[in-house]
Image (tube, rainbow, N blue to C red):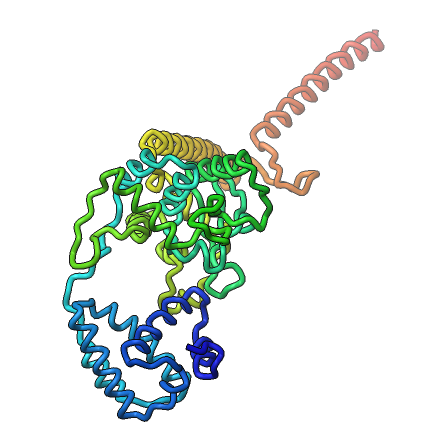
Length: 417
């Protein structure tokens, strides 16, 4: 099939992500083989009724294979995109009705428990696998986040509390910040050290998740989402993680089991802002999805509150909880100290008020007199002390006058003689 033809070029033009091109092309080619066509332009030239007949026959065959409705819709979406991009018309509503509704209970709804994640860590041997588990447990990101675009070391930034920040989907309107716990950050450092020891030249453009040398004989330097799933599945089996299969799916999805755990921990923590928790999940809901644009530091402040619950190792988690309790005790002690200081200031203020009240009472009774002081503050003169001083002055003057008069009488008698 000629992939340089106009009809196929238009089809690729309608796909925004490169990682989507592969599954969509696969589904389109599956439809082409079923319809016994080997030229995209021939498909694009079919009339409405012919296209309708081809689509109906294909959907019926997919249903006979007992495929889930969601799987049929995914395959059908690729063919519909091809037809839309080539301005073709068909009875879309009839095809959708033919696909039907999925009444089965969907799988992949259960999260991994923290104990199960820790069991995986203990069974993981290679540093990359250990870091992968910690990365997913700490960030709850989607599997494609590591390769669409490729996650690189330049996207990792050091933060306080021995944590790290990672920019997901950089240079995209869907970009957001996620974070590594102290535990996950140590696994990251160990993984980088292991890569350097094995001779890899590390630069800021190196992929965060690198392929092993000659792994799967691929030329790609970065780990793909599919390879990530394969590695995790082997570890889960080794750790004997119990998963219940319903139809073709398990109750605990290989990657989304981590994401659901992350979501549950954030949402169940009443101290974490629920709107920012949605941002850390890369969810876009309502007006907050558009108008609420928290900074990296604002998101990190909320993430820190969930570090103890996100931590995988029980010993580490216990230490985190103790550290959190010590912090809370210190905050309570500081609060008590502030209360004691405020009570002391209130006591002094009350004493000052009572003193001023007594002064004003004496003023009203005429016992003291207020007058401006040198510093323009209110001063007062105690009338009681002033009156006593005046009385003493009067008594002293009277006594002096009395002595004078006695001396005068003596002098008068001496003169007469």
